[in-house]
Length: 313
Image (cartoon, rainbow, N blue to C red; front, side, top):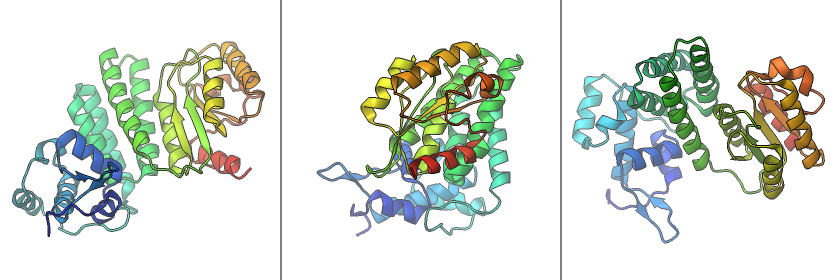
């Protein structure tokens, strides 16, 4: 029967082209579907739920707001799609777009920046939700999150953005990335990575992005927060038994202070855990820290390559 709750979330993701994270988010935030739960708290969905999510996916791709259409019934969703001339054909597999993603990412970036300038939190959240549906994880991080956070930082530094705009967007992005990270499913046998920012560095998005890149590369990544002294990072690394530490340095800082912190971290970990340092401010302090770090990747592909090299050791 259509209403019988029998399908696990991975099956639903395959049939709808939505990631398991998006399915959970739409359930939690908007009540788009209401799965049953097993004795072990696993979600189960019906054929009706699958169909509903397929239609919601199509409607969101047609630029309808999930927050507004999540309560629509099947008939209304079908009319909405027909009116938008969206083909009613649903992706199989992981649902990632492989062609033409650059224009889509640019459009999402522009929409996100417009929402930031307008101080429109709802529009920013819904644009990020559209990005989850439209882009692969790699595209999401490289083509949207990184340039978005960079542009916000530049506008704020140049006085083109008020503090309230920066705080609003950072809060939403932190929640968005954190939710994806929490829902990541990685083998318990995978290598572990700790992500954080060192003492004096409050900006979290770079470290969260690093953690997500690591999970996408098959690592178990734990983000422990910003502005942490070396001894706290070392304690967390030892407790979790991580194979690498990734630190983000975004704000301009005293290079010698950062150097001392990294030297302390190296000493506390007995120089046994590789330190990977990234972020916009690294280039200005590189000559001070190059002797106490293992790698300063310039971009996400370089970071992935470093993780692959470490995991092979």
